[in-house]
Amino acid sequence: MKKLIQTLLLAMFVVLTTASFGYAEFITTGLANFPYFHLGCLIIGGLIIVSLKHKYAQIYLSEAIGSFALYVVLVALFTSPVVDTLKTLVG
Image (cartoon, rainbow, N blue to C red):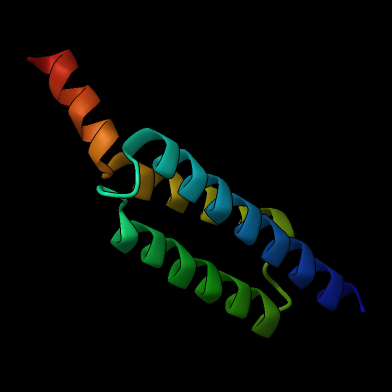
């Protein structure tokens, strides 16, 4: 039962984080420049982490949440608004 509850908590975290990423990108870039590829990468990465957590009980919930949070930050760094901001700061 504990394994199922932890998997559900992780899945809720993945869904909420991915939804907030999608909302932030939609507000920032609009529908014309929406990064569908990045959103797809987040969805697939979240599915992989949730399935690994479900398969292996040795993975702690905090480790799975932390790894997905770092993955979201990594994907967000390569979106258009962040790259444009970095170009503005450097140039």
